[in-house]
Amino acid sequence: MDIWANTVLTDKGRALQLKLLQGQTLQINRAVTGAGKVPEVNLRQQTNVTEGGYEINLQPVRIEGEKLIIPVML
Image 1 (cartoon, helix red, strand yellow):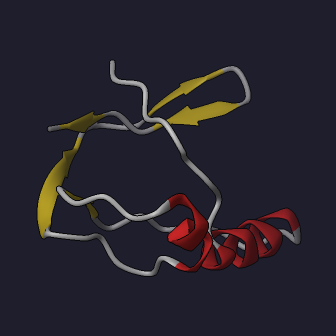
Image 2 (tube, rainbow, N blue to C red):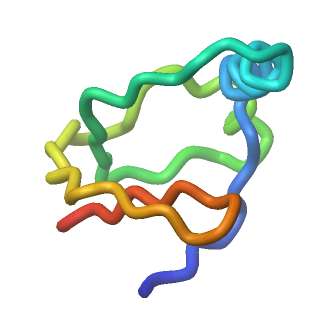
């Protein structure tokens, strides 16, 4: 497991989180990762990955208590 420094919840992520708290559902179809770095002050406005856009393979979902866990294969 990796630990990422300088992580933030983006503005779009915050809006999505609000929808989820209001009872809407979330469907995750894909995940991607980038290879670049973004200055910390710009992270909240980030809408795309930088340098790349490499697909991450979603693994079968599992439920642990009240958590839904979606493992990914890098």
